[in-house]
Image (cartoon, rainbow, N blue to C red; front, side):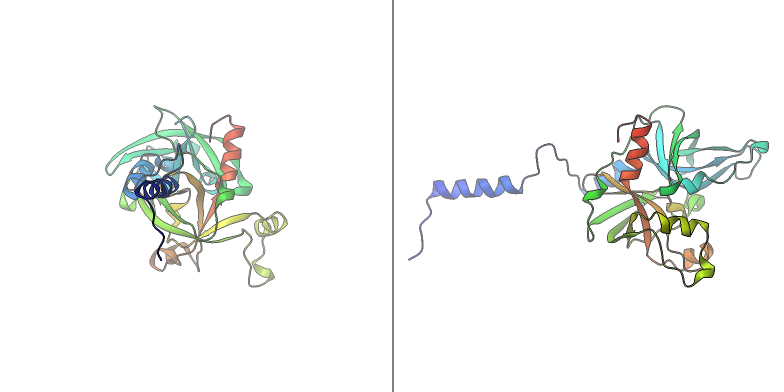
Length: 263
C-alpha cells in the first residue's frame, strides 16, 4: 500500500526543496554573458607610450582594475624591462575599445617579484573594479574564465574571454631535462616553491596579467602569468600548448592590503 501525502505536506516539502536550491543570502550570480561584460569593463592593456615611436603605444600584457578604481594588477615580469627614459617612454595602461584608446600614465606602487605580481597606480577618473576571492577555496576540476589581450595590439583593444578549467594545483617549480637548464631563477624557485594553478585554456604571451574569475560571480581567484612554451614565443602563436599557469589571488590580496586597499 502506497503512503498518502496530504496536499499541505506536499506543499511544505516543495518549499523546503526550493529553499535549498535558492542562492545563499547576499550571493549574486549572473549568466556568463553578463559576467563577461562586467569583467571587460575592468580589464586594461598594460604597456608603454613613446611620442616619437611608431606606433606610439606598445601593448605588453593585460591588467585588471582593483581597489579604489585607480590601481591595476598585472605581472611583475611585464613591467620589469627598463624604460627608454631618454626618449620619454612612459609606463601606463590603455583603456577604451577598438580604435578609441586612451593612455593613462602609471607607476609601480608595490611589487612582489617572487610571486610575479605588481600593483600599478594610474591617473584619471576611477574605473570599475574587480573583487578578489579566496584562492584557497579553488579545487581541481573547477571551471573558470580569463579575459585579456592574447596577442597584444594585433587585434586592437578587444579583450577576449577564454574558458579554463583548473587542471592541477601544482608547485611552480617545473622539472628540467638536465643540469644545464638550471639557472638562478629556477634554483630560487626550488628553494621556495609555492602552488600555482595549471589551466587547460589556451593563452598567449599577451594574456599575462589576465584575471582568472568565477563565470557566475566575476570574483577573481588568480592572475595568468605564463604560457607553457615548447620552444619560442613565435612558435606558441602558431602551435599553442593549451597549458597555462596562474598565480593564486592570495598573493595579490597581500599586496593590496599592504597598500591599504580593499581586495
